[in-house]
Amino acid sequence: MLTAPTTTHPIQFASDNYSGICPEALDYLLKANQGDVPAYGDDEWTQKAADKFRELFETNCEVFFVFNGTAANSLTLAALCQSYHSVICHELAHVETDECGAPEFASNGSKLLLAQGDYGKLDPAQVERLITRRNDIHYPKPKVISLTQATEVGTLYTTAELAALSDLARHHGLRVHMDGARFANALVASGKTPAELTWQAGIDVLCCCGTKNGMGIGEAILFFDKGLAEDFAYRCKQAGQLASKMRFISAPWLGLLETGAWLRNAEHANRMAAYLEQQLREIPGLNILFPRQVNGVFVQMPPSLTDELYRRGWKFYTFIGSEGARLMCAWNTTPAAIDALVADIKDAVGSLPGGLP
Ligand SMILES: *Cc1c(COP(=O)(O)O)cnc(C)c1O
Image (cartoon, rainbow, N blue to C red):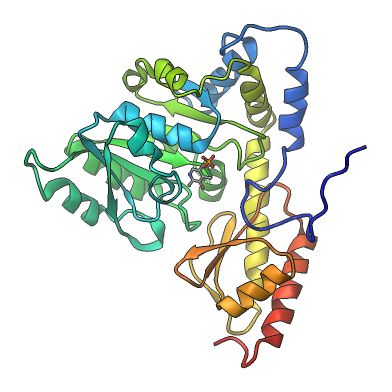
């Protein structure tokens, strides 16, 4: 009999996509594994999951399912742009830093224009400067504002901030794309409804969290402006993103939505991150880098500390400057795992020559 490979720590903090499939998603996956059903999304699971999205978001949106977030973002941006257009995003945006040029590839060359802004959020003044600084034929015409909710550094846009960016977009004839790889985390943390956080705040398209929330595979794409979804199914098919056994993506989605697990999972992950943050704040000299609003805690760690934690078997990313460690919680993070990590951090800090700088 095969057993899972053992790692030093059964729960890690590298990413919310280290986690397995949550029980509700798995339950619906198994339920969908009975008998034959039509392929390519012409099945009842897919119909029901799409309808559930429309009900929860209180609007008659177009819903698509693809394999992962890179595909969701890239194909969506390609649908919103011609090749000579450009997309304005934050310099830390996943579409810029972690998609290997897929948005440009999928759109045949639409260029990403990078803006800055505190706490991983687009600064409207900077966005406006990028939109208006040129209007000649030599500059790729800005067509989309892409923002991430919750952001790559674990912060939230308020609905007022979203509205300010989408008003700016409307004013200049741009569209607004939301990368919602952690949309549920943002939703429960904000206390807003799905509608308030998206189309009512001027968002045209949402790429919605599946994998990081507790699925095995699969993201949903919601077009609130249905006109933008014209021919999108062809784009998915051409890009190899049309699952023939679609029900194995859509049924787990239905499981998350129908049982409320997507919200419970997000709430749990956020709560675990709050507990982790609270524990870390008790370590003198350890610096938390961003206000924690969802399921990630960003901590300043000297390389000697990072190396010592890696040596003790912990896995996490450092991608904010050279000393910014990201510790992510997921639906399955336990207080015991946090206690074990924090104990190791305390111990490692204690053994650093000279302590924390
Ligand atoms: C994880 C993530 C994605 C999706 O990444 P894939 O690995 O392609 O599924 C998209 N955006 C953000 C902000 C993410 O964190």
